[in-house]
Image (cartoon, rainbow, N blue to C red; front, side, top):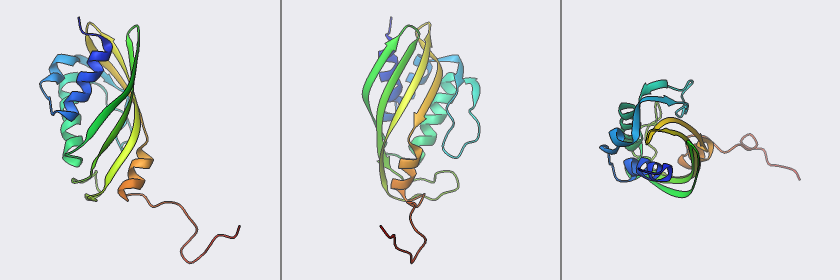
Length: 152
């Protein structure tokens, strides 16, 4: 039987290796997605796991064709697996309404998964989207209004 940590490693392989066949192997048909995508307002909730995972990977790879996720740490306890991940890539496709920037990013993420019967059944994500958007130049770094310096 596959371990929870191995499932997380295979999940990362979907993105790093474009291993779309793994979607059906590692995600349950009845899957709950709690993660909200950038510029999203709500999480998808209950979805078909393999189809959702593939759609998510294709969507992300269209924006960042060279995306790479590094598994920095994984902890498993009972039916939960938690992964700390560093993602990096170059923005070569539109991010929603925003045109491609051609810039690189590197940011940290935390992904939580619930596992049942050897498959991922639930997912939560905590991503540093602000750091990503700042690096891509999508969001301006806050500062004093133009023409005003800081007095310290």
